[in-house]
Amino acid sequence: MQNLVGNDKRKKAKIILEDGRIFSGFSFGAAGTASGEIVFNTSLSGYQEILTDPSYKGQIVTMTYPLIGNYGVNAEDVESSRPYVEAFVVKQCSRIASNWRSTDTLDNYLKKHNIIGIEGVDTRAITRHTRVQGAMKAVVSTEDLDERQLTAKVKASPGLVGRDLVKEVTCAKAYAWNDAGKYTVVVIDCGVKLNILRSLAANNCRVTVVPATTSIKEILGYNPDGIMLSNGPGDPAAVQYVVETVRQLLKKKIPLFGICLGQQMLGLALGGTTYKLKFGHHGGNQPVKDLATGKIDITVQNHGFCVDIDSLNKNEVEITHINLNDRTLEGLRHRTLPVFSVQYHPESCPGPHDAQYLFKRFTDMIDKHSAEK
Image (tube, rainbow, N blue to C red; front, side, top):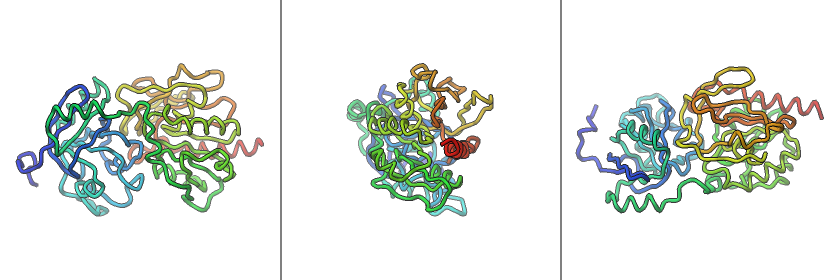
């Protein structure tokens, strides 16, 4: 195998963090300059699912596993129509794609979709630094290596707080995901991952996906048995139009299931507040405790904001799950309404399948609600 570390012909690249820390590496994928919040992901595999997760819009993803790209890319392992990360940082990008399902290399895939890649970087140093200092704004570039200019670009970049990124990832118009199923479910698309739709379909749901801006009148026009609030990127407090839609839906008492950003928007609709986590949760090994059963699930997560547990009315809202690493809120349910949510991703892709049962819990809730009407 070619010794890429010793290849001096590679094009140089730089990463400059908001606090002035500089990392040097080499370019792969597309050339150019990009800004975003730099975060680390602890998954050992599943890089294609991570790249195409719309929740990563606005973020530069650093993989902690040192060798990425060794099984190439294919048309099946995607969570949306294209990559949404602002840039991709790895220790080493494999130029050999060894898998019978592979149709291209990671390098070519990023070039095709105009995503900047940087390799040859000490990704463990980036991880340790952001793990202590917190996630922060950064700029990556393969064309402008002037550190003063890049520092100015970092300071001028928008960051995530107060920024509505949902409008950049939601679908343009409503569409039917599948045409059969016992339960009619409307998914409010704030950046939905495809495996959420697959999981709903696998649990006998006929799924219609609607844009995040869809009015409650239009949503009710589908006569839904249940509503799904999807995952998505950015600051939930900046997506007040969805929060208001959720407030109105709660009055209709339709069974509702929120995932990730969906939980945050639900928390806001229930009168709570959200805040930005120091470095967020990104990866496939987050331990979550179910407070009702005491069971521990290992979960896949991707979020930088969280609902403040203390801001919720405990007479109306029950805390169902907590993160065992930092004791943050991972799940809630309403005490009287058919409503629940989780902060993690039960659909996995990539990650453990421990929480897949939650989709069955959703359809069971729909059945119970129908029987009580």
